[in-house]
Amino acid sequence: MTLKLWQVDAFADKPFSGNPAAIVPLEAWIDDGLMQRIANENNLAETAFFVAKGKGDYHLRWFTPTVEVDLCGHATLASAWTILEILDPSLARVSFETRSGTLVVDRGPDGRHIMSLPSVTASPMTDAGLPGKIADALGTTRPLEVYSARNVMAVFETAADVRRIAGVGRIADVIAGDMGLIATAPGGEGYDFVSRYFAPHHGISEDPVTGSAHTALTPYWAKRLGKKTLKARQVSPRGGDLICTDAGERTILSGPCALYMTAEIEI
Image 1 (cartoon, one colour):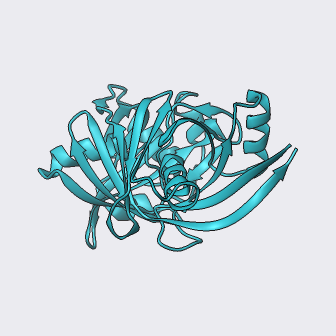
Image 2 (cartoon, helix red, strand yellow):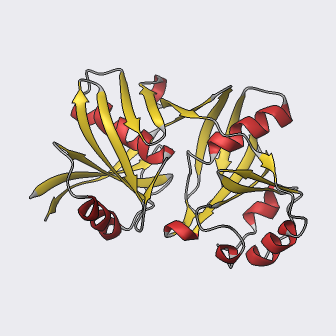
């Protein structure tokens, strides 16, 4: 069997930045175990597989190197880019049926496609010892607040606190096995907020740019800063910029994509 593969850097205007995703279009679903092995072989944060159900409509699934996940923003954006720019440039919109409902991506201006994702409400976590445990695990200062928002979200005082996190550390010992950790702080330098994302339980030490994390970050910072549209920077070593809009039950994210590789899989 031969499958096409595109590797696309999402939230990037040129290769070697943003978050890489492998995109594999299918004519029909293949075995789940085989999709997982392909994702493990790719060894990227996400490999996306989609099957067309009609013109502009697709079923979409995402796999990390170790598990299938319920939502991945950057691989959704990269999948839409692959369809809109390569597979069917006549389209202005694509719709994906996923584990997280219907996700829509529109062709935007200046190469920045626009993606709608379900928002997540952040709720304060009541474990008084958790901020200290997070600081010890990451080797950084204590977060000011800690929330549950599908992931654990730790809010730090300054962007420097987030930037100085050396890596995932021992955070897997602190957070539940189905959660990742979002570290965030006010941005400065032209950004409303910054963030980083760690998901060791899903085989991802640090994710370069995480669309799904911004479904919690955007409503939180929109409320805190009193503005609907925000400019965000994920300050991972690769880094990436996002324009985020709080639209109530939906979070609207926009960003460019850059093609890195076109390939074929032989299995």
